[in-house]
Amino acid sequence: VRNFKIIESTLREGEQFANAYFSRENKIKMYVERDNAQSREDCEAICKLGLKAKILTHTRCTMEDAKLACDCGVDGVDVVIGTSQFLRTHSLGGRDMKAITKQALEVIEYIKSRGCEVRFSSEDSFRSDLVDLLSIYRAASNAGVGRVGVADTVGCASPRQVYDLVRTLRGCVNTDIEVHFHDDTGCAVANSFTALEAGATRKLALRSYYLDDHSDHSTYIFQTDHRSDDQYSLQKYAFRLTFCGIDIDTSVLGIGERNGICPLGALMARMMPTSRDYILSKYKVHQLKAIEDFVAETVEINVPFNNPITGFCAFTHKAGIHAKAILNDPSTYEILKPEDFGLSRQLYRYVHFTSRLTGWNAIKSRVDQLGLKMTDDQIKEVTAKIKQMADLKVMTLDESDALIRSFHLELTQAEA
Ligand code: HCA
Ligand code: CU
Image 1: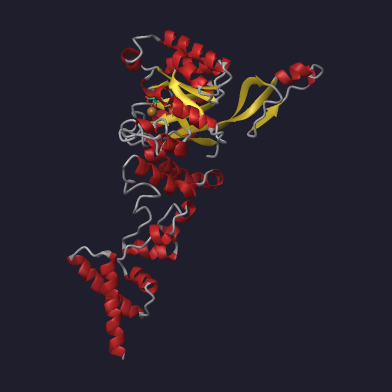
Image 2: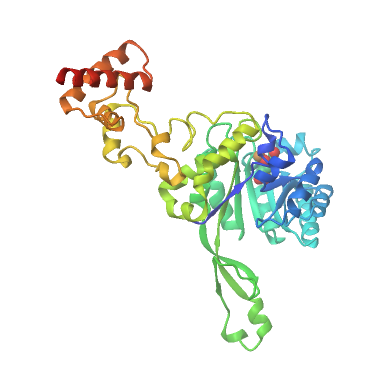
């Protein structure tokens, strides 16, 4: 799977995390996608930095919000409106889909008239009626939005449901599809990956384009013969064979409303086995740990122990059988390479020597690291001592090193 983008939403969704209070300085360090209203001044400050990135803001799909958003000087506005019965009843004053669609189209038209790109998302997509959903996406797509978004606002979707919806939607719109998965039921990464499998495809866009509307991942098929003498219609009726991609919303460490959304690092880990070259060519993955540490510190949380890639034990091997194989060839028990992420083996993938499950190969490598000389038989002997000791108490690395050193000292003294 190659044709996807990762949308970094730590500043928008991430700010909805219970512990997040971002200062402007920190927002500028993390900038990417921003929401409006009371954050307007931060947004304006970010726009004025003249960064290379496209600055989008995320707002409710109302005229009032759209106006504020465009006034900030952003390049585009991502608008969202509830489409499920739950949200229409309890959040949008009981409005029906006809009224919702009308409002959406007005707002889209307005944002376009201000010269900004528009993206349109439905909120609570997976508890919305399928026909309603496809109708409003199609209307938005025909109104010229650059991308439509599916949001699993409550985290209820299963991978199979995601596959079905994205597949169906792929057939209805000629735009990129953005997906946004909350992690309430632990499926955010799986759902994001499944959306990619369902939706990233080469597709003949049926809308017409002008010749100068180029972008590098599109191939243009031009009408020739019967229109060839009329330059204007030749341009007007060029079709575009385009890669319609999937854009995945993530945030650093997955922070967001409740227990958050798809975590950036976990998604990168998930993409490595299938799209390693693509990920490495497009993203500076060796900065992942620094970004996670920065965000963790800002929102005062710990990086989870079992975090993919950067969790403290993500590249730690314990059982003797594993350790032996890892020392021969790390890919025996590792699907990810710590070096890809700029993590040093010494720090992030050490073999766990000090448990009763250890084996003599692991101890042999530790003996080498400590610069000591021992025969295999001697190493087997000291391994037995370590295992014995580890049966009695939890041993630290320092303690097992001390045991190895004193065993070695006894050997040299005996020789002398
Ligand atoms: C929210 C909004 C949103 C929007 C997602 C999107 C969601 O409820 O806070 O625009 O794609 O989860 O529905 O984050
Ligand atoms: Cu959300």
